[in-house]
Length: 214
Image (cartoon, rainbow, N blue to C red; front, side, top):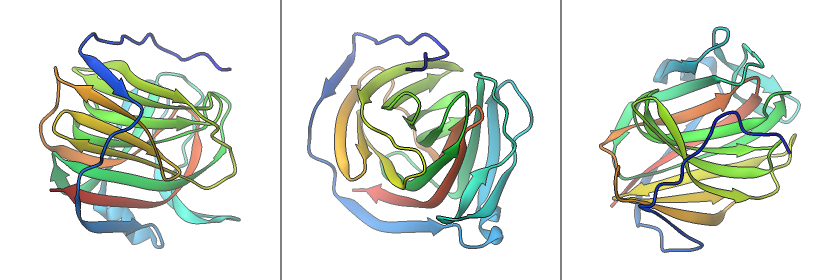
């Protein structure tokens, strides 16, 4: 199993549950990447080192989607696609994705309550680690606040999601609720949502679904 590239701290205020009810949801905003014009709805940002980032709508044997196509194997490298029209605090966000390649990582992620690349909550599914991890990023400091080992297959379509309501962050994978993290120290203000990748992950994102929570 590949070692993670940075230390994680599990604060005492964090509680993890194996299950828990999800919040009621409003209408779904379904973003699909069928044309390159969809890129105009996104802003793009980066965190860490490495080369430049460039997102594009591409065709693959398995379908069409958005991907970060300038790849760099450096560990300390994250790329963000931020959905410009939406900003709320309590929200459910999910994506359908397929990892195609990557030596340092093969991962897909979604984020919520994004104020900057230094302040947000993010969930990541990694093929090389066979895990789904939940992170808090505050003032540029990244901490692991929830994790579960689970089979994440490459070259296969998966769904990954996170529901944020008040101080509860619920993580989903392939239609299954994995865990709930209760964040009492930093529940977070409203923010934007979107997609992210790590290092040299070539990941195809077919869609982004966004639902406001009542």
